[in-house]
Length: 401
Image (cartoon, rainbow, N blue to C red; front, side, top):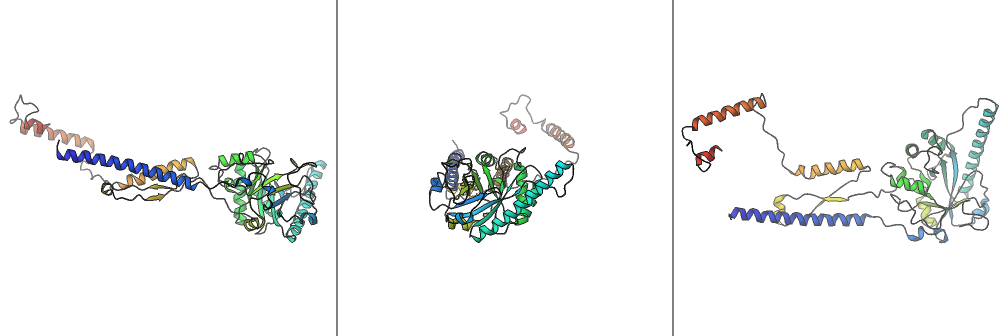
């Protein structure tokens, strides 16, 4: 066997060994990065009756028909905030018309709207005077989401320290605002105030949003106000971008009666809604009114190894370096990103190849004609030298082949 063949075989084995080792190292690095990036789950106590812990802050939310004895309520020092219902869907018609029934209904809606708004702002003054944090929520209904956002802002007049929330009762666009419209609502609130509202919804809807977070980019990253009236929620919590709730509505008329109630608040009826935060009172005051998106957890790859030049790899002293990779929020963007990254990493490392300009102006037809003339010319020149019975073993025949 020739020396250059031995060198070629040794070189081939070396390259295969380096490639295998490189693959193992890259896989181990990616696995370690993925494991280290998984956020630590919320403490188990925050998913199992956290209201029984005396250091967990509480928040009351109410609507216009809940009666409140503020003097008694303020005696519970665990209660940090009060969130009141503000607007409900679209504003009532500006002017009333139609038959007597329609006219009277229109006037009744206006009266209810005016009374609810006056009660809202009265409670706001009282709650803040008692040192409570204040918040407002919009009950999202079918209809123009931009007009609903304007209705909420006009009704609540939120200050810079006031929590804002959008209430989506169920994922049923025939009864409540669709999730697509809710995205428009949230975006408009941000454009007007520079802050995001938090999202109030139940377990089923929040799980649907978490599972479709590439589609609902804003809703899936709003701080979650989670409604579920069970003592434990660990196996039901939607996860996705939400590693924990911001507020958990654990007590309401559904599970609070005269005999049993998860938590009774002095000065309020049994139908009052009570919420717990996964932090103490001071911690909740610091993060109130939330207003920022939660961090996304969908980093598919934190980084990828950069290719190594062949000469450097043969030296055996190369260091693996990594380039950061931004994870797209849609699967089609993921595929496009992976394709373009591969092109840049592999094809971009190859020397640029530019074909020489063609001398055949008329294309393949001219090339074929010239090639045929060349073959005829060479054959005529060598005809005298060729042996008629020669085989491929002759030097002249091998040269022509």
